Amino acid sequence: MTWGGAKAGLVGVLSGLVVSAAVALTAPGASAKSTYESPYGYDRTWNAALRLVRVDNGWKVTEKDDANGYLLFDYTSPGGGKPNAGTMELVRGHDPDAPVHVLIQLPAMPQYHEQVLLDALATKMRREYGDPPVHRKPDPVVPDAGPDAPAD
Image 1 (cartoon, rainbow, N blue to C red):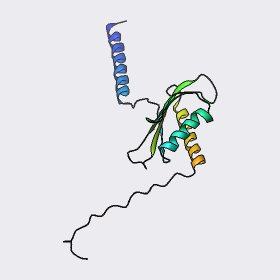
Image 2: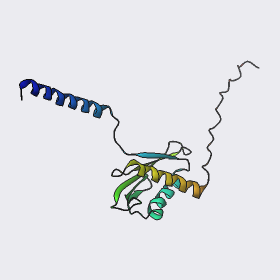
Image 3: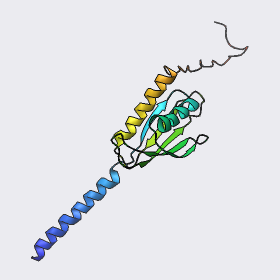
Image 4: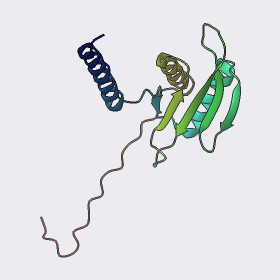
């Protein structure tokens, strides 16, 4: 191989590395995480999620903490196969009427498995608890203008 051919090959390899690095740095993370906002409140959502994992699907719960809102379990796909680690996290909103964010992660599985679980949870909650509660926003508070305000 001539020096010119070697330089061309080296430039091609370096160009490929630069392009790969640029794509890797600008692409969003491949975090397979799916979420659902539950309008049913924390306690109902936690109870339904635990029953979905343990009772409805028969998966082994390896760790749970209802106070901090996480559930670790061994997920087995509907087609069978070996169990894979799964996590479910429930995040409370600041307001008691705020929706509960449910995050499911099944790192060893395609993301659609996570979405299927979230859809099953939403269906279970609607079936067991009915339509989601309607949360009204409080009426805006109009400040009192005081005794010096002009009369209308």
